[in-house]
Length: 231
Image (cartoon, rainbow, N blue to C red; front, side, top):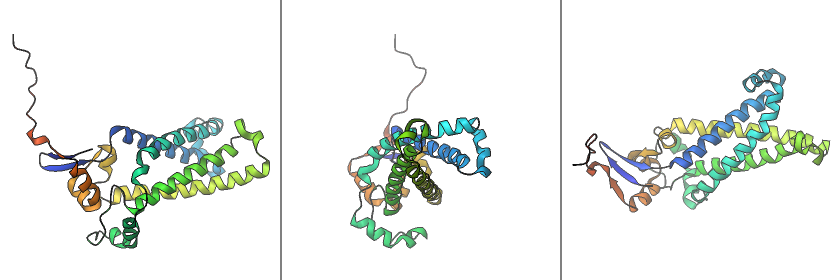
């Protein structure tokens, strides 16, 4: 990771390619699970099963997509967990969340790579994915139907549905925040943010990155294309 001075702006590396790939695999898995799960949840939404080739295919694919989600998020968890432990600054930041939402961030404490709200989303997603996978196992009749009683499976269905609704709400908040805070999307599309964005929203993290050095890419000599070796 690095702070870079480019022509006309300063950028800060936020996510390497491997993290961005994992993030989008997780995001696509969540979308597919939401669509297939909705198709199985209520007859009025069964038309969504057409996206997966019919009801049988939807029922067969849904749990396997869940396995992909668990695997991708597990890797994402390992990559991000060290930045998501709670600190006193997060408690203070959350007490001023109204100011953050209204764009008045001058009174907020400096935070690291993630603020308190982002950390809450991270831990909620971790908890909900574990609940969804655990209850999903309980109602995966093809492989685990004989391992649980009917009563346990009924409870599993209820908990699975409740966790799915909660996850949908968390994802909506996550997506909304990504668009609401201008300049955030580039972190997961290009892997970098502007220096102004980092200074405004994650000043402590920016200071930590700057201590590791600044790469001035304006000083890199231009490459000459089409020039072969001297004879």
